[in-house]
Length: 195
Ligand SMILES: *[C@@H]1O[C@H](CO)[C@@H](O)[C@H](O)[C@H]1NC(C)=O
Ligand SMILES: *[C@@H]1O[C@H](CO)[C@@H](O)[C@H](O)[C@H]1NC(C)=O
Ligand SMILES: *[C@@H]1O[C@H](CO)[C@@H](O)[C@H](O)[C@H]1NC(C)=O
Ligand SMILES: *[C@@H]1O[C@H](CO)[C@@H](O)[C@H](O)[C@H]1NC(C)=O
Image (tube, rainbow, N blue to C red; front, side, top):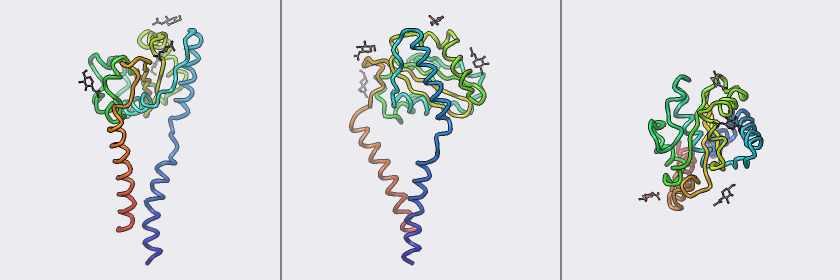
C-alpha cells in the first residue's frame, strides 16, 4: 500500500520532469536566425541585439497565436504594437509574459511564415525585405527575442528606453504569477497523493 502511494506520488513528479525535459524543437532554427540577424547588424556597423527574455516570451506567445493562420496572412498585421491591425489578443499575451504595457509602445513584432522554417529563407525575409529590414537597420532597437511555432517565426525588437524596454509589470504581479505556478505544482503533487 505504501509503495502504491509512493508510486502515485512519484508519477506526477515524473510528469513534471518530462514536461521540463521535452526539448524545444524549434530552438536550432531560432538560434541560427538570431546569429544571422546579429551578423547582419554587424555588417551594418550596428551593435548586435541583446537577448531580452520578455521579448522572447512575447514572440513565443504570438507564434502560438498565429500558428494555424495561413502564410498568406503574414503581412496582415502592423509591426508596431500601437497601430492597427494588431495581432489578435496582443494585450493578453503581453500580460501573460508579465510585461508592463507602457514599456512596449516603441517595440515591434515581426512575424514571418516560411515552410519548415528554413533558416536561410527566414533570415532573408528579415534582412532582404523593405518591410522588415528597416527595423533591423535601425539603431533605436537594441534588444530582441525570437519565438517559433510550425511555419511561423516571430521577432520582437525592443529599445533601451523606458517606452520600449519590455520591463516587468510590477514586483507584485511577478510574485503572484510565481505563487500561481507553485500552487499549480503543489496541486499536482497533492492530486498524486490522493488519487
Ligand atoms: C501605464 O500608463 C498609464 C497612463 O500613463 C497609467 O495609467 C497606467 O497605470 C500605467 N500602467 C502600468 C502598468 O504602469
Ligand atoms: C520570404 O518567405 C516567403 C515564404 O516562404 C518566400 O516565398 C519569399 O521568397 C521570402 N522572401 C525573401 C526576400 O526571402
Ligand atoms: C538597410 O541597409 C542596407 C545596407 O545599408 C540597405 O541595402 C537596405 O536598403 C536598408 N533597408 C532599408 C529598408 O532601409
Ligand atoms: C541605449 O543604447 C545605446 C546604444 O547601444 C547606448 O548608447 C545608450 O547609452 C543606451 N541608453 C541607455 C539608457 O541604456
